[in-house]
Structure formats: C-alpha cells, structure tokens
Image (cartoon, rainbow, N blue to C red; front, side):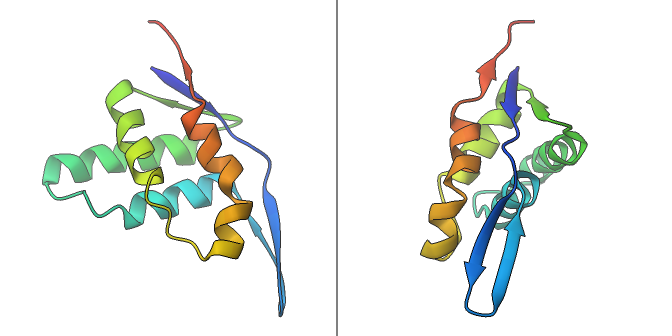
Length: 102
C-alpha cells in the first residue's frame, strides 16, 4: 500500500486572471487522459484510483497496483508548460508516496 500526501493547492496567473489547481483535480485529469487504459479491467482499476483520489482527505491511500497505474499516468503530463511547471509538486507527491506495510 502507498500513501500520497496531498500538497496544498497552487495558483497560476494567466493573462486573463488566476486559476487555482488542486492536487486531486490534477491527478484526476492525468488519469482521465492516460492513453494506456485499453482494457475493461484497466478502466475498472482506474475508476478505483479515481475514487481513492476523490475520497482522500490530506492523503490518498492506494494499493500497489493502483499506485503503479497512477504513477504511470503522471509520467505523461498533459499541461501547457506554464501550468506543468507549477503543478510539478503534485507529480512529485506521487513519486514520493510512502510505502506502508500491511
């Protein structure tokens, strides 16, 4: 099992204003756009990961296989550079997930 500490939201300034990005929305976005979800079982696993992300309250708890799926999804960021560089702490949080023995 892996535990991901959820970082604080990040604000990004654009020409037309400011947008706040949360770790949960960024991770869900990455999972949504992950192109390797090609089978029903992978889609079901991704749904469980999404549910764990949604349920997270300060941390996200994932089984090892769920963690590996999220980690793989985060290896293919789908953000414009200005945003991508700002949300790196969210991807770093996934990379630094704490392994917990059962």
